Image (cartoon, rainbow, N blue to C red; front, side):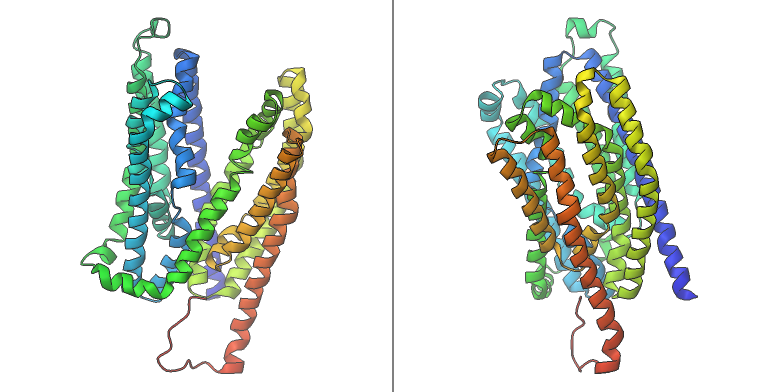
Length: 466
């Protein structure tokens, strides 16, 4: 009875958090579309392009130079908290805070120093230099995303992340509207200042990141108050190889994933024609709601998985994963056919005739997104079971497939879509099967262990995380 009640509580939290994330993402997306509509209406196309360059440079730099600590936090924070290893937990927080701070300082400092060269040589437009410097200050706060998001999600504070995201987008839209709409003929006179517009986006980014960071620090304040750095780091040293392994595999998987997403359009732009890029871009836009759903479901279920893994409740964890797989397979399969039909209708009826060639691309991407939605649970499970290296191997193989198409000169919209479909059908399915087998093995060993070896542990032994 108690087990059933706990399972229901887990599912209730999962449904609530997934709903909060989906609604918040939908509102943020709508507000960003409003920003795009306003900017494309009132800004010259060259200025809008410069704005996008300034805003997206730091996304690109963070992808390659920012060290992701979120998986390390999800992997070790619940375990150390469950085992009441206070000093080790303090060491973990110190290391992750230091990594985030160093990452932000390196990216921002590098941009401040190199922005004149980047603006002159890469983009040839020195007017970009002040734009980089203005928006770059936001990376000093956003670099802590990998720290504060896991803390808030582990403590079931999803709204503390989602609400600031929506408010930040709203503040940006309102400030842009006030600034740009103050003169009807503004777009003709070009009286706006791109520095002010970038500063508005910087304010919105700070609204999104500062409140959740403050809330997360308050939650871990009991661990950080009166901390003695050297003993805390010495306590963490027992987990050094595991922490480093998790950090390396987490960042490696992020780099390798770039070949499939978000680097797919970038690679098509380099190695294929603009027409093929347009076909793929249209198909990807139509599958964006499924991608949004994947991200929000993964973020909602990860705290539940890490909590059960930290408590070594593998039987209940297996039940959670099984129930998720059954539910998402049934629901997503029911929605698959209407999604395919609606996408076909939009491509055939609402766009120019030359875009009909995007249909097979759309079909392949939709099938990949459907299966990925079902299998998305295995990535957070791999984090908790210390199996991220298998995930990295799967992504390495998928990046290799893309590289083969590039070398053969066959990379186009359809082959890129096939790469994604192969990655999910073969590589991701194989990875998921291996993670599932490891979970079953842990469940069996936990069940028969007490009968074969006895319940009592050797005196003085330390509890193992896994």
